[in-house]
Image (cartoon, rainbow, N blue to C red; front, side, top):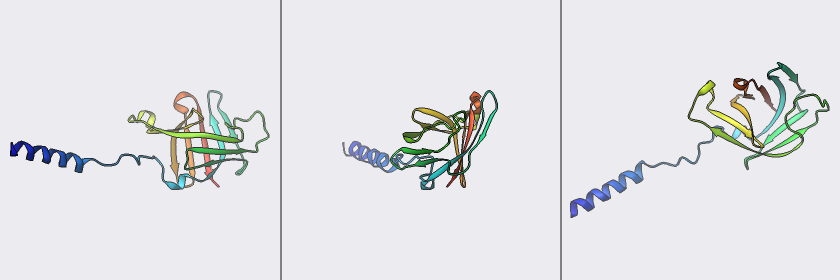
Length: 139
């Protein structure tokens, strides 16, 4: 009986020590939570290419899972994605690396494509579905 209790205690101890906290699996570091200018939208089926001056359209990502968009673009024909306002965002992390994509950015329930952040640039790429490439630059 002592052997069974000892084995049970050993098993519980092993399981407890081998567990870790997977709650912090965010694909970004704190530098992501900042102001970003939408500077370019290109691609799509028609091959659209639109550039915006820095500061015209600003996306402020907040740690509470919201993005505040300030859109001062006056060109009604431009694909500038969101009007001024507050939107929810989240990351969708996949186990698949299909099309080289492990993480997508979802804003207001819209999948904006594969998320990549390098230095002072965020690229959102949905060309794998004939979508757009969105480029944001740190303010």
